[in-house]
Image (cartoon, rainbow, N blue to C red):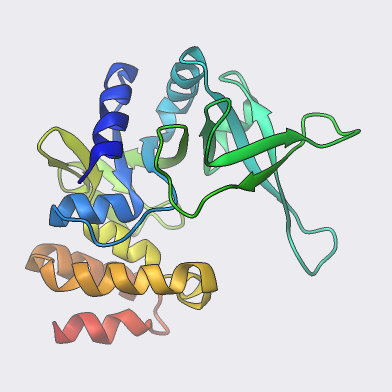
Length: 235
């Protein structure tokens, strides 16, 4: 059921930095069952360990890219990749990186002609089946708490932030549901259907403490209201 995640977890065990699976995989690890295909594998790593995880992946033969957007045409974002290394100054300020194994079956990367360190890419499949791509998201922690990057008012004890399914670490489900309750995700054609499926499967299973945290976090983040709040209060 979790063959790809088990393989990835075994691969990451030697990196010697805390990590946890996030996104839809984390929700399935919480439920201990599969509910849908997954377009990629995502993990979180704390910001102070960003250089260490990048160095680890490069030493394993992977390439590390910053995923960037150019809005110069004011209508449609031009998305591209920039190759980076563990000494890159941008690691202190970026949200995360893409780790891509050369010859990846999921993402085809090609240098942009007549450009310096700019790469175009193509997503080859709708579901990741091989361990050849990893999105690494950097997050904050302080004084024993996970801190949401947009406001210090939303935080979670580290012991309740990273949970385990057997030996596999994953981000707590209420934090995943908090992320996907962003109105931008709910409006996105790409995210809407799978996020709705994730929410409907997971929200009813949340223990009271987890649900209370989610309601409080959404109330802080969206004082004008959020469609998920009333739904959660009815559960």
